[in-house]
Image (cartoon, rainbow, N blue to C red; front, side, top):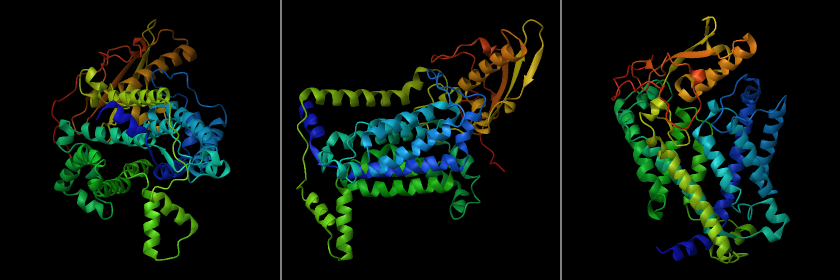
Length: 471
């Protein structure tokens, strides 16, 4: 395909219906996420923590003082509702993207791939005209109403979800996963679940799940572009995500991914579905169904305006850069030596989902260089449960906490230049616990960097050991 043909295809008008439905689903899922944060008491945890782990380059982001975060989440809920019904959509979408990304960046310990995906999709939707139909905006301001959008608006979401799905399969082509770890550890501990629990006690089922997960992502995700296979692949994905929902506690991720997968169907699928449903009912066709029939036949209310060549170049350049970054981040770990599941260098923002079972524990030792006095510090006294679980297995977070302790000892105990060392043991995917960080290194003197650090201990074993099933 020539560039001119590609450009024409990306800017041709297509039905807006699927994009509008995705907007409604996005708003509804985000509203539910805000409700979950409030119901589980997660909002107060942010401001109550004496210390937050910061993403590199975003150390300046702090929680709102007082009850500010409660107001922040209240605003997030309102914005999500506005997005769902499509009122002041463009303003609401931009504000939601900023507000949600702020929450995402508050504490590195809360990193989840699906929250990162929400940030990316919200960023994309700031420039997508998803309010042209099925929205309050379209009713109040007829000049914004249109039955079409340029094809790039559909393809932007398709490519974003495709990148996530394909890399979620590629990252599982590693020795541990191919030897059924850590999935065997997790599923063998779920044998008490109704219906599925019996299956999880069978090793052959675990093997099918292990290799099937690779297949559905590496081969199934590209097949979503094939019209004949699309419905069957979607059905498999639907079963896959429902099984994940009932097996693991992974929040909104299954539902958000299902909503994204719907974007691979033809853009007018919601109208066709409504029309088919009405035909099955053999009932009278209401005016809005008559309009759906008209649109399905291609007689649109208003078509796309021709976009100038300069504007087309800006759109193509923006999405080209956006997706180039998305393709680079998941493979950047190859720039670092060692096993990424052990060193964690290049682990985040790479769709490395469900790849490691890594229980770890850490004890810190603060030393006064003037007197030689040593304090043993249990992180439990400073960190919340999620922080306490995440920190010992991630060297970057270990370093941040060491810096925090050094600052605390200088501020509270008048110990300048305090030395901080740590004894950390971690067991990756059933291996025997091993040292993760060099215990003699003064981490208070080590700087945060995106480069490889030499104080992470070597990977303990090249091949996963036979793992005992948890009690």
